[in-house]
Amino acid sequence: MKTKRLTVAQATMEYLKNQYSERDGVEHAFFAGCFGIFGHGNLAGFGQALQQSPDFRYYMVRNEQAAVHTAASFAKMKNRLSTFVCTSSIGPGATNMITAAAGATINHLPVLLMPGDIFAQRKVAPVLQQFESAITQDISVNDCFKPVSKYWDRINRPEQLITSLPEVMRVLTSPADTGAVTLCVPQDVQAEAYDFPLEMFVKRVWHVPRPRPDKNALIRAVALIRSAKKPMIIAGGGVIYSEAEAVLKNLVHKTGIPVGETFAGKGSLRYDDPHNLGATGATGTEGANAISTEADVVIGIGTRYGDFTTASKTAFQNKNVKFININITEFDATKHTGLAVTGDARVILEELLEKLEGYKVDNPYRKRVADFNKSWDEKVAFAYHVEDKEIPSQSEVIGAVNEFMEPRDVVLCASGSAPGDLHKLWRTRDSKGFHLEYGYSCMGYEISGGLGAKMACPDREIYVILGDGGYLMMPSEIITSLQEGYKITIILIDNNGFASIGGLSKSIGSEGFGTKYLYRDKDSGQLSGEQLPVDLAKNAESLGAKVFKAKDVASFNDALGNAKKEERTTVIYIETVPERKIAGYGYAWWDVPIAEVSKSESVQKARENYEEQKKNERYFF
Image (cartoon, rainbow, N blue to C red; front, side, top):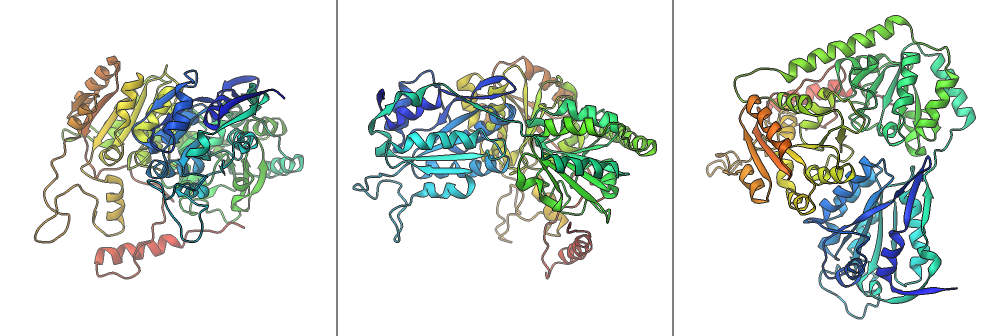
């Protein structure tokens, strides 16, 4: 057997750059490179290997968490067929990645994490930044990745790499099992040389399958749909990842079954398709939530049924409602005690389309759905153009961005009050034009996520919408976007605090406690003093961004035009009215437990309302 003498780190990079994914006959280099920050624990190993492998590009980031967000966003835009490696030093560099690793796994997005680790040899211990345990020496902070990883391994001997790396790739390329994968390599092992077999470095193409459903499950699903009078589809992210948009459109146009969209599934149909009810659940539209209440058969496609989608199990009120769950993952396909139709969404919809030939919902139901679509768009038009002469509302800002953008451009958001408004109000014209990270709703994802989206599709303009809270969490990747020449446009909405959680605080009777950026009042001891003198526009400018300040909708529109002409990352700063948000409709509830006893009358009143709402929560058997 012919061999090649390499360090473990060198062999790892040599292997990874030869891995490809393939679906429907189209190949993709699975890794677009490596993000990271070097420190002790990865500098002399992975760092040295990357230095001598310029064809496997290294990208220096400013925050390890941001690196993983950027990789996850890239993978999302690539429909999980490509991603990045993320490496860090040991200790804090590694644990910085845990938050984003959880987000990647929750959202079923492939990212390979390679944190540095302590010495396998153990002679030199404790090393700088080492976590010690009194009950075992076989532990480091990297063990914290286990709960948030779909696969986890530690390489203590060079030859272990030969069998570990294929397992890494198996999980990363699995449409059902993908997520964050963690490969820990102790720093001494990274630098150790070994005679690796040459076959290990031959190009390998990993076929991403489209599993077909169980025949009997499909027959039962067809029978259940044919019996339905008021069926409804809940379109999740799986529709888009499987590239099933066209067949979904064909199915609903032939059958008349309406569609409600989750955050990840928004864009499965164009906003103006008469079968599209729009956002569903806690942040749902009037039509989506009305139809959800009455639906007798709910067909979930690629959805996890998160609590926003189900309005905390209050959305589906028909006492005889049944669920058909089309999902690549068996775990999600069995939720709500539904009929599990496990497999690839596109091939399942293709088979359903054929087997449902002749089935249609009745005309009054179809017309009612189309009327909801039209009336909702009228409400959107009003929200886009409130025409106040004072400080603009967030809906006006969203409307200005939506109307300015080209159809293939991308809006990206993750946290705060904007996701709810975007879910209800955004007019989607392209299935990749709406990018929401709402499985984890991680503050700090936005700017790094915008960078990842731009790297995945450099021909599209990327518009990142975030509040001041999200901005302050992680503005650092503005610098990385400048370093790499990837321009994004950041819409920075200043609410002087956490507007979303502030609104939630008021709804539970706590009056926005601890959600504003204020000085501490010397007399009361509370954070209720004057506003803090933070200039976010100057902060962004200091990081190298081109900054435009807008005070109203007219100047904001001017700023959008000017920003598009820029070749570097641009920030448009605007203040909005924090209190005015789009109301919920029907069963648009979110279960946030409220104190059962309190001295506050507002909390007591909120608790009474909570107990009433709680009665609508359901089990599904």
